[in-house]
Image (cartoon, rainbow, N blue to C red; front, side, top):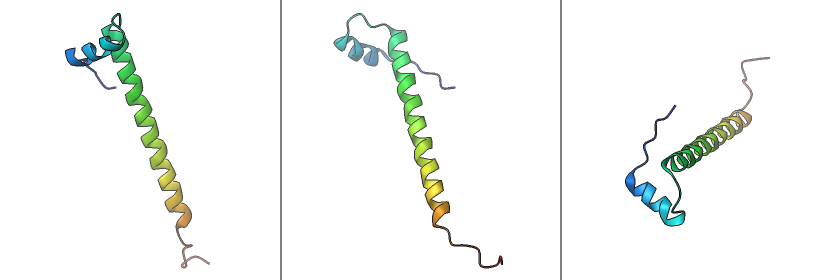
Amino acid sequence: MVSISVSTRSLAAARLIDPDVNTAAVQAAVEAALAAERHEQRAAASTTRREHTARREPDSRRP
């Protein structure tokens, strides 16, 4: 698990959009964005592995 600390600057930027936003909401949004990014990275890595495996030529040592 990643521990996230919301900076004063980040909170101030969020409050420019919504003056009533609280720290917990900003933290939850950041955590959700990080989780989505990790998911996308894993999906991309998985696709790359499958493509690499599919392109391998058969092992000529096996009958």
